[in-house]
Image (cartoon, helix red, strand yellow):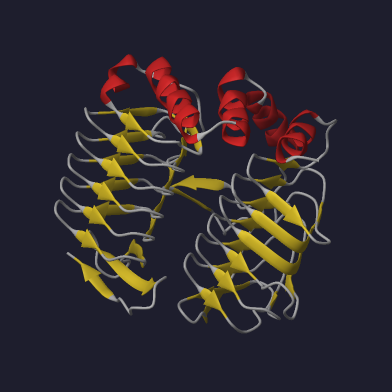
Length: 351
């Protein structure tokens, strides 16, 4: 079977098959249960996923078992090939960029904050954060059932079977970089003729309400998602608005369900991840919540940085490479760097 065969079988198979998007790798003794959703670029090796599991963009799961109704955000790393196995319980939320070391057990209903590095077991219902992760509190949640993707995946599958998203996937699987860039640019112009001045690379996925200024640059392998008022999404404020001459580096991921806006002359570095939605862990169903992100004129977001909304990055601010940036709950109007995903230690408050 080729990658294209695997993708088409998953997309057009009879429900309730799991949905694997294009460029997903499933190897070893991996198994994925019904109504699970694995997004672009994720990799599973010897990973056993129950039903109704969500795996975000470019997450890597190896040597692990994942219980039903668990949400694994983008850029997460769980386990290592050939190492002691991990167990992720049911109804768990692993935030964007989190890392779970081999052999760790994450209990049912627990929450791992974005960017956390988990090196010890997490009790059921625990909330952990930090690098390394530490216990912050215990979850107090209204029991309204585990997350379920059964109904949502019917809608998502129909949309991905349409010509716009299916065409992107097919050219990513079979076309060269030039063809991929041409398809990406044509898609943007079709969505909004005013985007004709944008310079578009071989993008991985564009499924967003896009708007903005002139001479925007989108690098290769970029992922842009987030629907709003134009193509109805969860909230009318969703979508991505990029100011004049903004540049989005290769491999960056912009998740704009809650809304991402930038001023002019913003630089978002390669591999950076901007996230504008979260989940309400006060309910066991973990419903999606908007967490908008605004990036001011002339700001610089370093390579591999992780920005987790709600955030307001001021004009001219510089986010170092690999920084994990969250809202500072103790200082209204400010954001803070809580760790780094690179070798150099980074910590402090952005003003």
